[in-house]
Amino acid sequence: MASETARRRLTVIERLLILGAVVCLGWCVFVVARAWRYQSRATATTSSAPATSMPAVETPVETPAGPSALPIGEPMGRIEVPRLHVSAAVANGDDDGTLTVAIGHLPDTPFPWEAGNSALAGHRDTFFRQLRNIRVGDDMRVATPYGDFTYQVSRTLIVTPDDLSVLEPTPEPTLTLITCYPFSYVGHAPKRFIVQAVRVPAF
Image 1 (cartoon, rainbow, N blue to C red):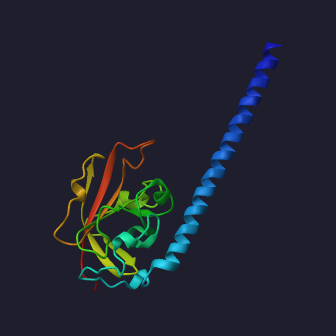
Image 2: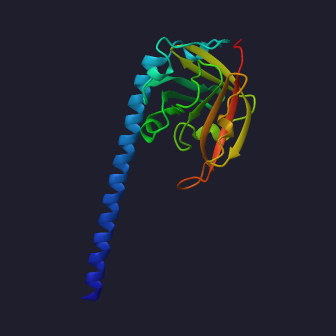
Image 3: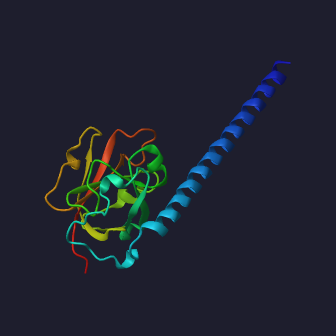
């Protein structure tokens, strides 16, 4: 009798585990599909030129309505790191909803078409996964409706989440990428991986 009860309990546990796995898989499929739809829509609405032929813009550009007119979650461009085969839409905002479907622009920093230090954040297990292989000297390209820009990686570093020095203004147009670190960490990672790149002319 005891063994029969144990078998029934084991069967119930197995079924619950299977159900949990199905629910998790379904959620993952939903999240991936939502991100894919967003990326597809953003590509069609924000790119001002093909990424393979993006010219650099040497001077800052003002948007017709000003930066404050760009709502949180609104697509604003696309970033590519050719050597790493990274290509993803960028949206304004660094909230969870935005970072689930795109790379997010930190609203308190300049836009790429403005002067200064523009910061973008992304999850280490989705759009910024390949940043673990970034190298100093790698090219980055950002296409927006207000201009297309080319950058070259100048440094990488690891900081604590409360170290905001990487967001300080810079004398030259700079792109700062932020993701969690270590890349293989399970759960909320304790540090941040930073990539900084300076705008350069395109050849």
